[in-house]
Image (cartoon, rainbow, N blue to C red; front, side, top):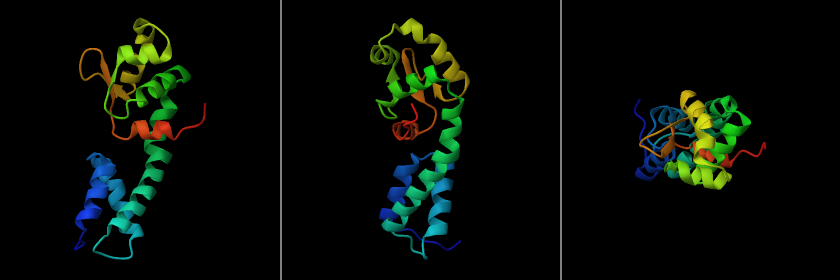
Length: 141
């Protein structure tokens, strides 16, 4: 389309997207709509990230959050303390003050719902980047 990005603008968008394809599209649309023209600047990218994040919070992330039960949200909040790096199931249990075995059903349901996955034994991680940030922005409970 003939648009150009400053190196700084591109870096902001790539970092904010976590290189997740749908997020790249969301931030790309936002910069295209918000910027006065090209080349897109770092300031344009910051505005686009703010707009894009609001859009993702309103739809993409909130739909996942809305599928989680109250107990599952507690599990997700405990995970979010590790940001998006992944969490040890024993650490989650410790944070929640329960035995690891007590968390099995919530863990299984969150995996079934596609919100988390288990990259290796005793570990869980969010299926999409930025979920921990979204959880940190939630104040509904």
